[in-house]
Length: 141
Image 1 (cartoon, rainbow, N blue to C red):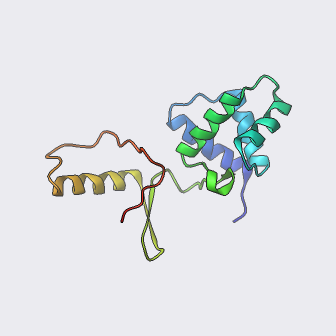
Image 2 (cartoon, one colour; image 1 turned 90 degrees about the vertical axis):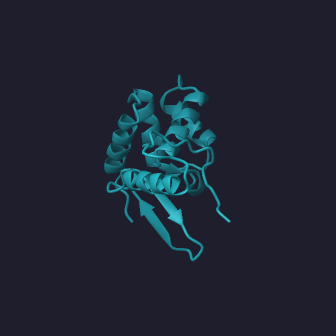
């Protein structure tokens, strides 16, 4: 798939705004660094970023990378390559033992979780307000 850096940048900016993040000059510059080159680590992103803005701190880079990972814009396993898709407004992918997967929107995921919690007797006439992911990947055995 051919990536369009400008379109990817717009999608990521939109996701950041949805999460309540301010779009600062440093964040935009870090996005440009990540979009322009494949970086293998936060340190590499930092070294490229300080060439453009010597005042940027390593903590700023790490926070931005974590934020981008949280919104699904980058993937550490893909060496900080952009992984967003304009048709993907977030959501979840469930991987199955036969190597197939199911993509679920956030609303569909919430409905499934609510149905499961209700069926198991954990909730009764309640709605989920948030789900805290304490791990990045959960293996079910």
